Image (cartoon, rainbow, N blue to C red; front, top):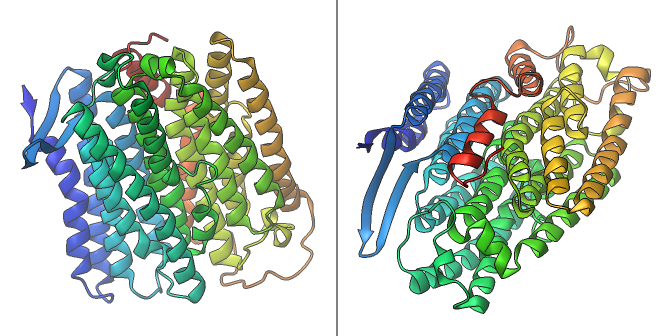
Length: 498
């Protein structure tokens, strides 16, 4: 029996949290913090209920008719749960961090209101049961993240917001065309494991190839596929919690998740392969991986270096989707989680450096490991995980992607993965060398706190996310772990065995 209440509560909880927070005065610090923490941790409990239910065969779904042939459909499947669990865990961590980071900032109620609405939109994307619903929440995500990008209100922030809107609204226009065209061609359809367009066979082949391109282009903006990535480094003017949200929880991950849905549940991976569209998608993802890594090498500003790292790392997901085979699928799905854990660790540590010492650039990091050892230990975990050093979670991703490429006979993918890992090492290891082995070469740019490391409310979320990244690697095969869940999705949703 289908239970409609669970998905409605999952979507409604962050929405109501955000609306109530908007009504609070900035001086109501304790109440706002309590609401933030209640919303975040209640979501974790709800996700636990859904995980238990889906494993035990429960079906959660609801359908709301908007117009004839247009339904907002929410459905909880294993793939949705992978994404929604990640967003719930990282929402809780980022909320705790943001409360401390924005302790004395202006417009905190506005910030946390839009922050909760961003999680609302991300939850809707995760639970979308059809392409129309996915499109609606995807565009809501654009609107509610824009105020976060421009939160500081500086000229630089406002300029970054304009760039962000130009990219995302253009992508949304392309998506609207594709969704409307596909609706006219195939009628109202829910997502189907194996794809509902496969029934067309060779009919409308050129149209379907064109629609695939439009959908990838529209969703590829938020996924930061080359050449649609330009907004992401610019958006790094936002506060550290926003950067973490954009890179690890919401925006770029939403784009990658939507592309997974298109390939597996709209077209179907075998049908997409027969149309000849997966090869070009794999090549585009591979180019983006290498391009992002090369650009990261040239950036001295720490958050921009991390931003170009995201451009590279998110495309691992798309590359795994485009390489036909069960192991690459598992690699793509598990990287959805692993990249989130590693990237939130890196961005929150960058926030600690900026908030505690005023350090924003790589050249300012000489000796910072001795001044902030716990923060830099977490950063080291994130950096080594991105390189693919075992036993951190990033190694699991690269092992399955490489094994999947070998299984599919696409050896060039392994060359790309090795080259990317070497480039990752080239832009992360010099940071670690400066931090741990170089003596402090100049006074810190703006030391706001003396003593040991960052304040506890900033330090605890960073250490926890770093511990999760290590645990996801060491205990990769644990029941309900990201890897085992990716294997479950591969077999249950896509018909693949491990």
